[in-house]
Image (tube, rainbow, N blue to C red; front, side, top):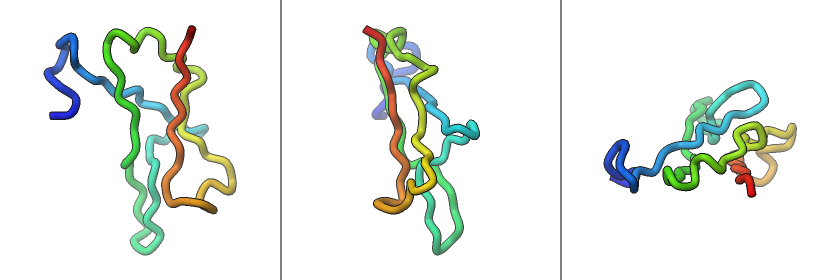
Length: 79
């Protein structure tokens, strides 16, 4: 529902940013030892060609979970 009708002008597609290990998960629930993808960036077809895929990623520094149990999704747009 949020993404809109597939292949329409208003369809919001996923960027599919990955971490340094090519993983997609953005959330870790330590109590259950579960990794999940809760966070993502959706983008319109008009903007999709401006996504710099090489510089878009899920942040995974060693201390990623010191402030939150979610990892940041970074999407870089070309000029």
